[in-house]
Image (cartoon, rainbow, N blue to C red; front, top):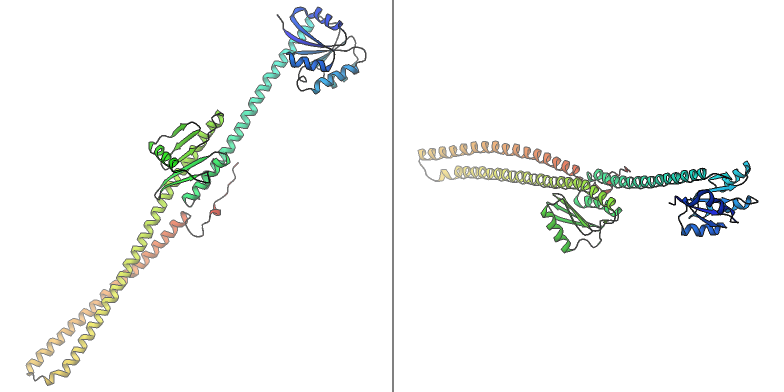
Length: 405
């Protein structure tokens, strides 16, 4: 059984005969006379070890070794120099040329086989270590990529708190899939109705909107078809149109990444709905206060005007009676009765005027209270607007830019 393949580089055939005599049939030996021939043989055969025969001047062997180490297809195969004699300086020069070992002939079969087996074991260990290092590198790169993606997701969650409206929230969200070269459409179900956003400048087509709405109504968290994946939350939905099916690791990372972002977006859409509903309610109450106050003010003014007109009419009547009674020819008791009745009416009217003053004062107090409540309501409205980032001063640039990764 052949234990290994050896490539022998020499100028004569004595080395080949000696190697066959030492190793017998346990080793397959190939022979080349130059570095060029060696390279061609390595391309055709699996070679475990190169034996480089040193004949005459050692410089030619050193040059051959250097040529072998330049070629990418052969520079990882161990090269052992064989010589009938070798000085310490020759060993240093062979090491500098790239040799693995330098042995002095003759050597026994056991020694040669032991060296070959050791080299084979060493190369197998190096191969395993290389594969482990490659796997570790791929894992590290994948982890770094995952960390970058996770950093973008965390950044979105941080910035989503400051989104002042649905459009700003959608723009923040779409930044992440755009950075990952993913073609996406996003759906928000809001109190304003369904809002669609797309990474495509043309937006979502009518058919796409219908399909997204239908899938959202079905309520499944994940729905996959071909390269498309839909992820549903109560108020938001994401359609990814070009999922990387050929990369299972990346595919899995995206399926872990976006649900966290959609959960935060869903909570923010709910908060925006509540903020807008509260804002509309506070504005409605403020408007009602203003209308009630205006109505009471107008009523009070009309009441006072009517009272003033009534008193003026009474005074005019008294003046007319004073002037007309002497010429009316009434008996004294009739005149006395009539004047008494008029005086009584005037007193009653005066008392009503006093009550009207009290009523007007009550109207004024109510109006003042409504003014106070209206101001309080306006302050509440302003507070809601500030918290919701809906004031005129709140700009998109006010969003805090936090670089986490």
